[in-house]
Amino acid sequence: MRVIYTRVRTNFRTDSDMAFHSRNERINYRAQQLLYQAARWVSWLSLMLLFFMLTSLWLNSIEESPPYMLTSYLLYGSQTLLAIGGLRLFSDHTPRPPPNSRADNGKNKLILFATLFGLSWTASIFHLAWLGNTFTNAEILADLIIMMALLGFFASKSATYIVIIPVLLASTYATLNQGDGSVLLPVQKLIATILIVFSGRRILYHWFISNVNKEHDKQLLIDQLDQLVTRDQLTGIHNRRFFEYELEKVFYISKRDNQPMALLIIDIDHFKQYNDTFGHPQGDTCLKQVATILEAALLRKSDSVSRYGGEEFIVILPNTAPDGALAVAHRIHQHIAMASIPHPASQTDAFVTVSIGYASMNDEKISAKLLERADLNLYTAKQRGRNQSVGEIQAEPRQYSHAL
Image 1 (cartoon, rainbow, N blue to C red):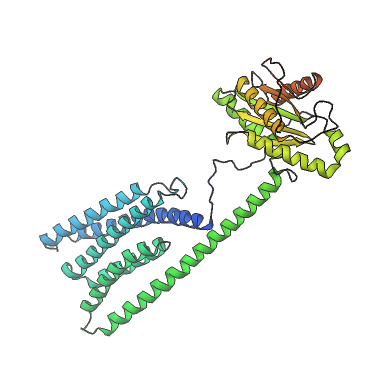
Image 2 (cartoon, rainbow, N blue to C red):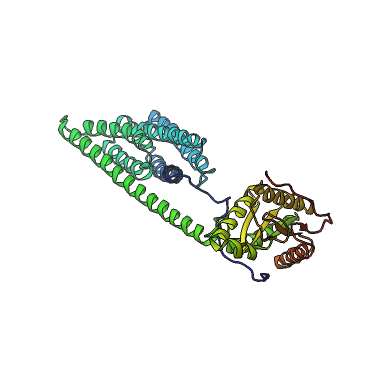
């Protein structure tokens, strides 16, 4: 067996990476992510608007009546607190965890913020129009808030309309009061604004969905390519390429955290004679059976089995001491025996057996040294008669019962 000394740099995705089981999960998560950013964006813009409004109010304070000044400071002060609260509440741009049963909490939080945001600015618009008699300023402010809501909250129909409807009603009120009493212009403006908001949100949302769908399709393609790159085409388990990366990763983590790890190298005994007796198609079937058995013998998600080449397989056991590695080896032997795959040409048994060499990490500086020790132990297991495991723990070969 050729021992690998090269360091693998391939960047495969791990189980800890964010995964979406469906297209809808990805859409919901991206929408929530976008809405979190939108809440921060409208909060920042609100602070800027409030700064300009308070500055203008302070500069014109001599001309304004005390009741108007008092209500202005109370109203704008409460809005400032709401904007600061929005910045703190939605400070995380990427809500965690990925979409699950707790995703409704983020949605409810956003709807509450949108409701308070819309009502507070509606109050400000009425304040300008009713107490301040500045109808034009009220209309301009309403148009700005409608634009902010449309561009920011378009990913949520509820949040968009919760903000826009009361603001639009306040804007219509301001338009009615600044004119000559005619209702035609306010009604025309109301209808036009509704059409713009409704169609604009649909266009923006379709653009958003299209981009998320492209992202999802791209990730599906990457996953498929990942399977082609990291899966053995015959057996369906991981291949040597995956093993090389996984070994480096687990070895590094084990060294960093001062935890044990173990390797098992597994070789099907007398597999050449099996092929000579039954032919290569049946030999391929045997390899698939053994691969399935090995996967079933590993009980933890962190463990992995890969086809190393030919009839050789290799198992990585993170956080596993020598006694644990030996226990896994015995379980593999027993599962192979229970499968009772006939092998009349074997010089060891009438059924398919395996030899296993295992090694646990000691003071190796590089993973190749650990792999080399496991390989030497496999060679020893073959020299001692096969159908056994050899490693740090000295144990007599066991007898494994076959299924009847």
